[in-house]
Image (cartoon, rainbow, N blue to C red; front, side):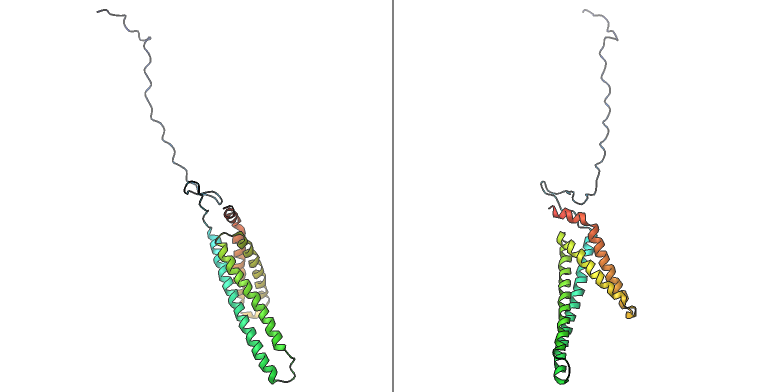
Length: 195
């Protein structure tokens, strides 16, 4: 047996360093998607951003106001028909009254009734489409709320109306809310238009 030289401590290869465990990965950050950013969906599809509560509330208020204005228009229509019919009956029995005066008054009332019906139906349609994210409905809703709010201001001119002032203030507040809600959520409507 031949024996070689004794091992030299300096000639030996260094031993590998002990392995240290890898640092754990940080947890994934969960962020809320902004308007217009795609959310998680099937590959190739992006989900529409969720409708803000302000838009839903504005749509509901628009529909309620539209129903009230439509009912008011129907009331004017019935009143116009009643005035026309009753006026014609009075004109035939009372001599000296101007001819067709009742018909003219009834015609004016019916014109107001048609205007109220048009505003009410348009407000209902726009309110329903606001909740669907239609841009034209947003613009229509803002315009109608401005017009109805300004018309409601006329009700503040009569200090003797008692409880009617509360209803007038509620109508003004509802229209101001609709304007504010539709103006501040424009980015959501813009994200819906891109789809």
